Length: 265
Image 1 (cartoon, one colour):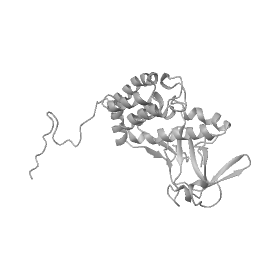
Image 2 (cartoon, one colour):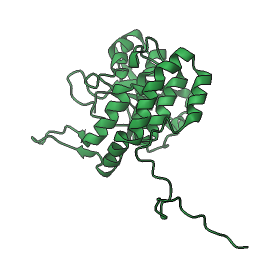
Image 3 (cartoon, one colour):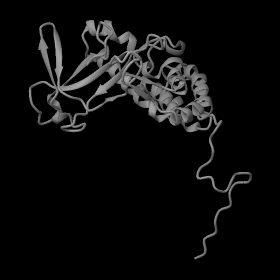
Image 4 (cartoon, helix red, strand yellow):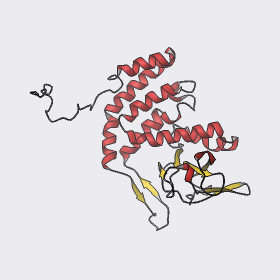
């Protein structure tokens, strides 16, 4: 059998692995997305988010795509100490990464669409279909940003649904802010050396001491880390020792900085 190679499109380099989508509006290029949104969203809501999705689609194939390429080349840098030698850890990010954050958390407020009212001029909260339409488009330009977006969203949702009124009053506004100077990002301390991400083998314990709780144990890493004030969700066993399944675990909410603005140990 003879196989004939298909010629490259006219004007396109023959060695391209995939079409170059630079400058493409990802929203306009995907009419199926528009069709689905028209089916699953009220007409008034669809008409409201349509121009915002169009703008995000253009940014995803243009400015944000450029930022993603730059941020990928210039990764974050961990600084262990300040210039006086004090043990104050902080992470330096490239300005291109900050541009991506400003779009996701600031202009479009993707992390808070289903929790906070008034984002992008809509008087109510957005249904999850609308939220994930923005997530879908944004992830096409920088999938890595999906972690802080969704972890912050999940942290706020847990707090909103199960947190005490005192915790809500203290943290919920920051977790759903679109003002970058007031934003609090969420994170997750889950993985431990003993069992990876298997919450059934957690050994970190939360012990009540007076009117507060203290955590004892070691977490392997936090995802994500950020310069912004952070709220970390840390799964811990309800009873000492590893549990046979995740059903015996609870979630502890803690701030990345203490009241005195010192970092939590």
